[in-house]
Length: 483
Image 1 (cartoon, rainbow, N blue to C red):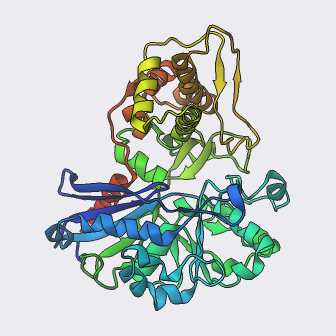
Image 2: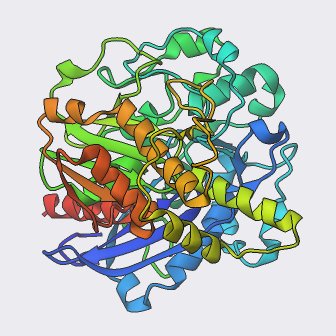
Image 3: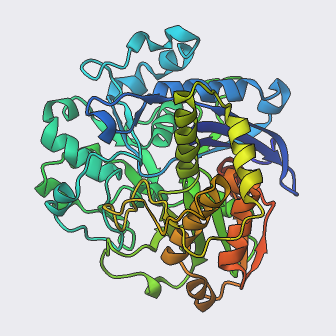
């Protein structure tokens, strides 16, 4: 569809806990419609708590609900779609599900009977989505694999690591599929009717075993491990046209351009970054602190799994220096859940909102304890998977709830600032930090802690760092360049 005729661009974010759409247009990139819905897509893994799996069909069902809320007249003006979402994760599918059954699959995403293809791993034509939170790949398993020919290390939850684990432990299951990709790549392939999935370098790099300098998978290492490399998607640069919409989709006309899918961190940063001297800290479920780097010489020549800062492909041949902590709002959510569990033992039920409001009220005027120190790394870190959470310096004087919650919040920022200290940012020419994310928007205590740890920089809150918006903005940029 000609960009000159219609000027609206749709950004889609298939996130870990929610799905969001954003529709923008005009020279000032006006947001015309935006909606987010929780996906509730988590399903039980057959390996227990070490596994983190989601039903991709439920994710697409949630997306359909978001799209149905966009006014029909606006959907008719969409000319470009850009899809982003959770990085690192992987799913597999048969050729038939895209070429012959994807239309039916989309039509069947209605109500509770959407799982006529019920998620039985023994017979379905798509696998579950194995997410970035998956812990099935132990340190011992990862150390048994060939060293990647990449500046990025391998970690549990990364697509190639997960597939190598499946290749070793479930070879018959893996052999049933012919394609792999992120859930975003699956959607792009289905919408465009692609025989072979296409992904962007942003997502390929997040899987491991990908050389960004050569734009190539580490075929020899993966083949050595017994992985059928034909499973891997074709990799392109951001802004590549993957194809066009093959039929009407939720009121969007066929022929609309669909771009190769992008990483959610990159799109989130893109949505708010205004200068090469800016960095972004985004704290929601997890936490990312990132800034753009144009000098490729700063990239390490080989992977260093112990380094807390990694460099992922961004836009226009640049990279993002990212300190990506696995610990953020998920830690505080576990703290709240723990309190609710304790209170339930005494016959008291506390609603989520009441618990959060009380904790913030109790801690907002507390100064950090001189002795009580919380290391809140409940989920470890990629550069230190064995790191556990701990509490030290407990005394009779610092066990009140406000001080404890304050110490947990402070510990989260201690952890991030240890990964990427303010001195590292200053050394790289950063003078402003943009704070965003659902946790920062709702939690004044966390905003205070950001200021305490990064106060040497100009700190700016109130920006909506949003992956769906960033994807729509990038689609609009693509559209303008086509004129």
